[in-house]
Length: 471
Ligand code: FAD
Ligand code: NAD
Image (cartoon, rainbow, N blue to C red; front, side):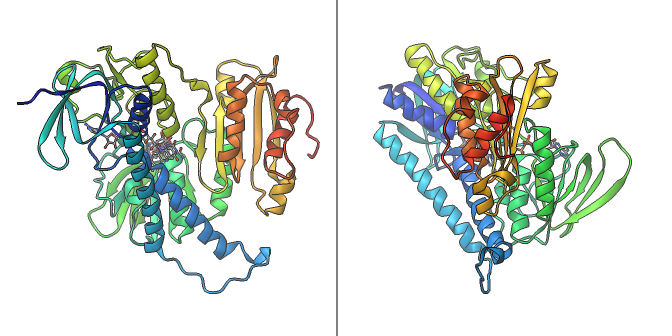
């Protein structure tokens, strides 16, 4: 047999964490390989996550708006029809363009793309079962695990991606289900509930907690989001747990009851979406062969420099600690290469934004009120509603608000929370402010163009230490 090819760094997994790291490593002059078993680069995010879901969110929003929100704008439209096949095709084209783009970037930066499933043979060597058949073996001075995450299954319900689906099925349904029940009112649940409700499905979201939005979302904002999404037609059962599921017939039946016990009922739907969270994925990687430590929640254990207990094997992205977000994975990927090449790297985990791409969008960065209270930090609150913002008024899109939380003593910004159209773009300014340690007064004294939604951001900052002008 021929000798295994030698690399400075091997990335196992070609998702956002793996592909970004591989490109960065190539740019740093490291001899780099990236192993991906899916047959496509981009991982969950590009293939079945961020990108396809945003395509469907954007186009279902347009459809819904054309159906329900044009008359008052002076636009009379004729017969509006949904062409779901074409909507899915548009999504697939966006995905294909982006994944091909990553392949091009690999070539440009001298990264070897190895299509197959990698598994550790020993601490330095990885065997790859190639997608096109056969096997190869490569050797790395450094190996970075970036194998991502998978849907947490719901006990008792078998996923078939037709009647009982994960987000992967939810971005590929061939027809609009008459009724859909979503288990879990977190980000996936609410984004997918929005898509299918806008396209005509009767959607019910069952959420265990008393609040939607999953971990991190500020309670005030979550309450507003709940109200607005309910007005759009999504039904909610909060503080409710699913106790049993039966998918044996054409209709899926779910027994639900109040989370605290008590009232019970059976929900029926053509399609049930399981969206109760995701868990790290590293099946078949052979971690046990080399003794890499994994915790009780399947996260691969690392130190501050992303090193496992075997120091030249590091981990980034969804398969280790922290929020399961593409941009978090991307930051870690760059940092891990900097550690490998230069010995230093940095990610500010206190300034990672979160965005829910419903309409209106919800976005936040930093701490929420509950987290500040729990930490005993004294803070000021400043908020500004979009109803008082001139651009939102001209857009006839005034749902939502901006909310600032800043240190009561120093005025340093501790958190920014937005619900409103374009919140996902606007949060970048909050993230920059947080990263630079700005005070709310720093933001309020920065000139913002008129008329823009960003003026609501400035005025909320102003309201934190003084008074807003327009409210
Ligand atoms: P992944 O993207 O999961 O990539 C891991 C890759 O490793 C996979 O392609 C897998 O095939 C490969 N792999 C696994 N094992 C092996 C092996 N042994 N050998 C070779 N290859 C292997 N995040 C956001 O920030 N914004 C969003 O809008 C957003 N929307 C989302 C919507 C949905 C429906 C979902 C499910 C997720 C969404 N996320 C979003 C989360 C985001 O997709 C993840 O945080 C991100 O993909 C993590 O990147 P990763 O590289 O760590 O893992
Ligand atoms: P999540 O953790 O955001 O939400 C899961 C929700 O399900 C929680 O609210 C939880 O209370 C609820 N839940 C758990 N068990 C339940 C049960 N038995 N019955 C009813 N409700 C239950 O997880 P998710 O929405 O599945 O998303 C997974 C990951 O993907 C998250 O880390 C998320 O950040 C990421 N993601 C991000 C985006 C984005 O950035 N726009 C979009 C999609 C997914």
